[in-house]
Length: 119
Image (cartoon, rainbow, N blue to C red; front, side, top):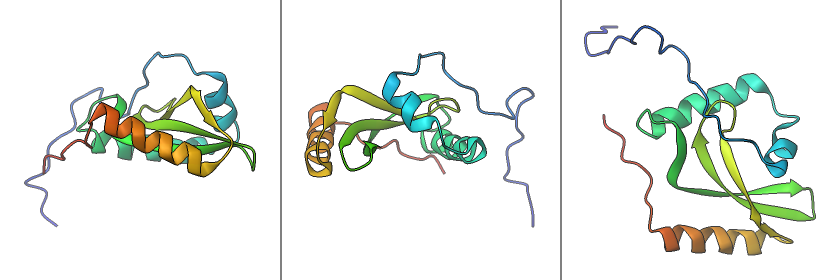
């Protein structure tokens, strides 16, 4: 397979870093039992989806169950090794349906679209 169209990775950029934003209590709870290697893989994918920029990805709102069967939270995917999603503590709901509606409303309010990938 030819690699003539492949760009060389600059020295010091082999690994995805992490932003220094603090992790809130909901994120700590959500991250506590997750596989670090899989989180790193996910963060790398999100980094490329976000055109190689760190931080929250515009238009990628999500819903996460933070307390099984009891609590759902709205969040946003983030290209960050230490924090691949940002959960919003002020957007916690008792049902998945409520949280989904809130996530859709937030996306509509912000009028964000997912970044265009440069191929």
